[in-house]
Image (cartoon, rainbow, N blue to C red; front, side, top):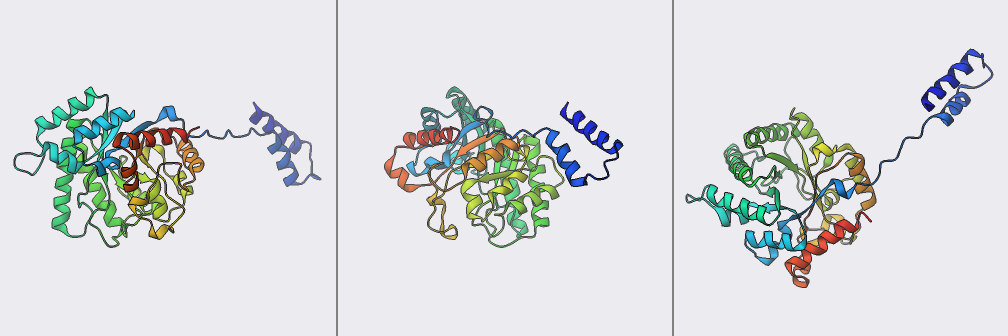
Amino acid sequence: MKNEISRRTFLSAVSAGLGAVSVSNLASAVADEAPVAPVSATLDPNRVRFCLNLGTIRNYELKIKEELEVARDAGYRSVEIWFDRLSDYARSADGKGFDKDKLSELRKFADSEGLTIESAIGFASWIVDDADRRSAGVDELKRQAEALAILGAKYVAAPAAGANEKIELAKIAERYRTILEACEPFGVRPLLELWGASPTLSRISDGLSICAETDRADAALLLDVYHLYRGGNSFAALSLVAGAALPIFHMNDYPSSPEREKLSDGDRVFPGDGAAPWRQILTTLGKNGFDGVLSFEIFNRDYARRYSAVEQAKIGLEKMRALFD
């Protein structure tokens, strides 16, 4: 209705021959009647799934079923697993893949505990320049995707593992497209993960460029608060990442010291206990339509000494929820 009023105001002014009125004054008059665009609310906690990345409790040296029990007891309903733990439990007899019966058994166990396996973390060398290593990495990802399909997981992390030098973005895009195609038959989506200290892939701008150049709608990123900061990214750049291209977002925080370049993975702290701009982060995710997984992931050895596995996981969940208060 106000848009119609604004148009009438403008047309009336023109038809009245208001030559003495400046264009800027007329524009101001029209703007005064224009509707005010609503400001998007902070991300709605009811639209997301709070998840425990089981790497958070690796320091306790638990078996994968025990890790799932920790997640259950801490109040989570979904998890991200790690492939080395999965291999310990379900390695095939030839040692090259996974035992399907064991995978089915683990799926039933997770279901009985009320847990969804969202994704898995692995380090396949799909991105490297060496052709033989890269081919082996793609084959590894195929085996991982087949296993995840049995577990009901939809995603697998695809970081720049093994790449210790800069690689042309066009080449990365081609290689990323290869693994998207390789995992598609299993219904599993590789997520391009940024690592803050990686010389290959640490910038949102590079990740977006790579995804755009794959020419695939399923290209997507896996971002992490610590890694974004460690890589020197501006959190304003999150506004460019549509929610559909960010199924999982890793939740953690970073201290104000030491300086950014000296931070290591073990320096991560509970969400809200560090210097991350949470209002900006959550508001931006909300505006972008994010409705995926918020996964708690830290590797703080001091916490492992201070808390039990369940205590640390539970505090992480409470800290994530508290950010929305």
